[in-house]
Image 1 (spheres, rainbow, N blue to C red):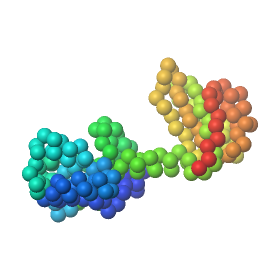
Image 2: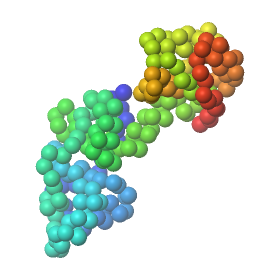
Image 3: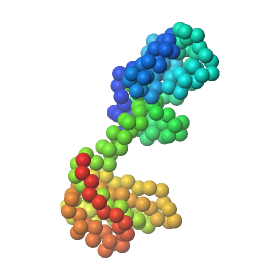
Image 4: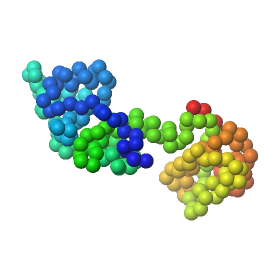
Length: 205
């Protein structure tokens, strides 16, 4: 999935000459965790509530102070064609709440927020429809996922999602979500095949 498929389009942006007081008022009224700062559509920075607070507390700006006093060079951004995982990594690495999204001409066309990532996660995990979640501990060996999906296929059940976590103590955690609420026979076959089922639960939208 690409950033452009999940970003929030037509974001509210501000210009370097926007008064700090107006930025504060806008953030308070909308609840935005930050705003891209643009000049002629091109990104020149971002402003967060923390930036505004620091300016008020540390610099004691005069009335009419503008956003230009807050800007830091080289703002972090992401392209609309980049993988969603790249945006998630940058948000996590920098502890950001949002990233400006640029088009192929480097113009700001949206923002990708943590909430956008949550929406994508819900869709990826198939959580919007009834199903059964099966958690397994499987040996960290080649071919294990293929063996699991083959068992599911024999039962004629669709797979809504399958996720893996990093191996721990030479075993990998696998979370399988199947498109049925009647999964006892499938679970029994998984255990017969030697897979350790640690949890079975049903989740509805």
